[in-house]
Structure formats: C-alpha cells, structure tokens
Amino acid sequence: MTPFKKNPDAVSPVVGVMLMLTLVIILAAVISGFAGGIAGSSNSGSLIEITAQTKIINSGNNDTSRFEIDIISVNDPVSTKDLKLKTSWKSYDDAGNLVLHENSSMPGTKNFNYIKSGVSPIGAGPGLPQWDGTYENISTNMSFGNYAIMAGTKMVAYPSTYYLNGEYTDNQYTDCMQAILGEGWNNLSSGDVVNVMLIHVPSGRIIYDEDVNVNLT
Image 1 (cartoon, helix red, strand yellow):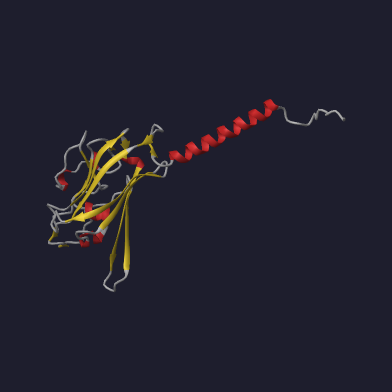
Image 2 (tube, rainbow, N blue to C red):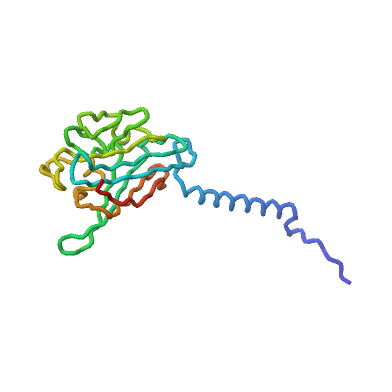
C-alpha cells in the first residue's frame, strides 16, 4: 500500500475554521444591517420607534377643518430638522383622468405665507404652545424644522379664515393646509384616502407610514 503524503499546500484545520468564522460574522453583520432598515435612526444612532395617529378633517370651514399628527410614543426625541413630511392622494379631473397629488414639507423651506410665513406643520405640545389655528400666534420655534417630536407632540395645520363652504374666497395666500396637502385639498371628501409619511432624511428611512381616511368632523 502507498502511504499518504502530507500536502504542504493544503489549508490547515485552524485556518479553515477561522475563515468560516469570519464568513459567519460578515453574514451576521449584513443581516443585521438589513433588519435595521425597518426603522429609522435617531441622531444618537439608535432605531426610531414611533407610534402616531393622523386625522384629516374637511368640514368645509376654517375653524373645524384640520390636519393633525398626534405623536403617541417615540423612543427618543427626534428633531424635525431631520425629517420630511410627505403626503399623496388621488382624484379625478373634469375629463375623468386620474390625478396623483404629492406634496412634501421640508425643514427650513417656508411653505405658507398667510399673515406669517413659516413651515407647516406647526408644532404644539410639550415645550411648545398649544395652537388653536390663529396664525398671529405662530412663533418661530413652532415651525417644522425648529421643534422636536416626542410623546404628546402634535403636528398641526389649519386652513386660513378665507376657507368657507369648501372654497377659498381669496387665493393670493398659501395656508398651512395647502402647504401640506396641496392647493386642491379642499376637494377631499369623506372616505377619500391620503397617504402620510414621515421620512428620516439622514438615513433615508420611512419612520411613519399611514393611509388616512378623510372625515367631515
């Protein structure tokens, strides 16, 4: 019988085990990174876990119509300077064609100019004044991009006093509702659906995504 000869070019068992361990560690890191994409990252690098509820009410009049995101819980306060608010909804034009309406609110980019100019949605709640829709009472720290969201924060928009009976009597201004939902938002009626997203800009991750039914009250 011919005896087996040692092959000096073969990989030793120790090196083989080390290579396999390295491969396992790399795969685990890739899987962990993929799973982390489910939620956004806060400024500290931890995953953002947010629970919120959105209301969109179109009663036809300025005093009872509103857009409101109520932040129920969030694991860490998140500055709105790192967020983008995006809304989208569909309607049909006079010719029966389907039209997609998309609108985004970016921190620091003024999007309303009624009485005061600023960035909608307006912040209210912890550390901020409550807002009743009176535009004279909007302060700089209430503009989107200048406040942080935490449990109890409300992100709010009301139409201007020119909004009556489902129509605008003066179209020279853009109010907070138009800034968020677009100029044709007043055509939204009960049962229509608006998609609302909060996007964490530094990570590009969607931290809140909800289809919201429009109500009359």
